[in-house]
Image 1 (cartoon, rainbow, N blue to C red):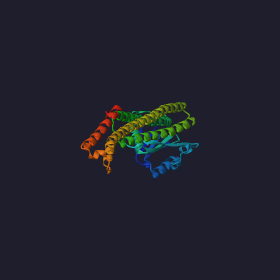
Image 2: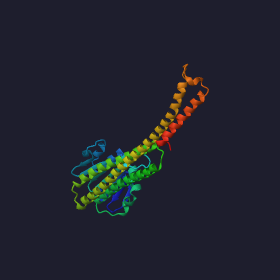
Image 3: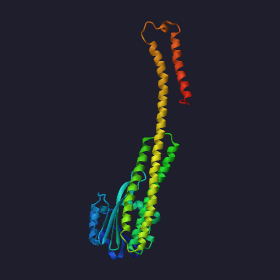
Image 4: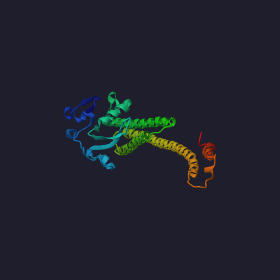
Length: 318
């Protein structure tokens, strides 16, 4: 799908590049959703843009994420794709600015997530823009809001999980799996927002003609710094949660070991007595004694009672 935001502040939705009947001078923004290689080639030929940045997906150097030529600025970054139940998936966003037109290339998953998580700002059809840069800065704000919403989502899940764990005495392997999922998702947000910050810092150095652009980018950087603090808070909460679960598991294990110790002591002493009188020696006086058997049974019972009393004093038995 292709969306055109025209300088008349109208939005046109198309299916094919060939359906674009407008010149670059009439367009602020072109959004391409789920672009194929064929579509990339068509839009490159149609608007004379360099799409070489799409061939550097695996490189981690910032020079591969931010390319600047005399008449074009290209950059890309990965952003977590929201999933409420499982691990987030990284999706890439490519942005190219040329001839006063901003080109966005993103997946339908991210586009849908922007709509779902940033409803308050995403409906830009009711906003009038005076330049492609204003539209670009608005989109940067949407991305910042998306990061904030993702971070808030993780924070809510962690807090809810924390409350459940505090009220629960039973733990399952799924609990630790959920901590791993939340931790991994939080890590993806942190990595993504770190790359996004680097790109924004490079954009500031670009020296846009409109002075307000640099100030707005700095404001977005301030917002992202706050989001980064909350990301760290989520890491701290997850660490505390993991320690809390491990502590409770250790307490449960200690209780199990105590129970096993009590059972072992209560069984071992009677077993010792039975073992002694089960020896086939001729000179064991109690074997010929009339009250030998009741006495042996009594000693066994007495040893169990003594052990139980001892462990109760130690408060091992409630």
